[in-house]
Image (tube, rainbow, N blue to C red; front, top):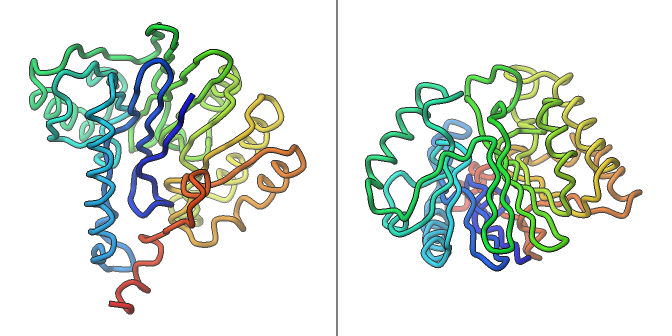
Length: 285
């Protein structure tokens, strides 16, 4: 199985776009965006240039993919108007079940844009599919972060090919909740990609108790599955001091001989935390 993170926060934009090649080609969450405001500042020139670069890259991989999956309808996880949806098989979050108002509106805007141009559109919530020798399993809708999150729901996606399994957990933000954690453990992946806990909001939007629970869940996954690599990125790395917040997780992984790293590090690159460094980027320019 070939796994290529295309656009992630550690690569300079908000996204979890990932290309997976088995005997088929799959692109998970074909989108990217920028934080509209950070430190009271709009995106820097360098961020805008990076978004253009990685949006083009996502588009290139989308055009060669056989299947596209969309975990939820936030603009960092899908492009609302792109030509690459044409002639693709689409696995989508159900726009009518367990979805908040804003995501529902965006979902139907996307469906109207696609029209009849795709090969097939499937609402994938809680379903499994056999595609050649590849099996794709989608979780039931899970909260985007904590319990009763105002951000709505997302789908996790598990891809099995031969003896290898990848699980893409999108915006579970932690994982904070037992249901999301248990689903990951039951799937027992070799590689896990997920959005980490949003430590940036610690103390006013999220609690230390929730962060501690997220860390315990991560350690539970490390000890109770065969996972050898966790790509922990997205919300977590918008905090430049994120490693301090997950130190016990990093130590547990090291003891077990497993890896917890960013998407950039997985690719052998130096992370570019552009949003978190926005003030510095304005000074440099």
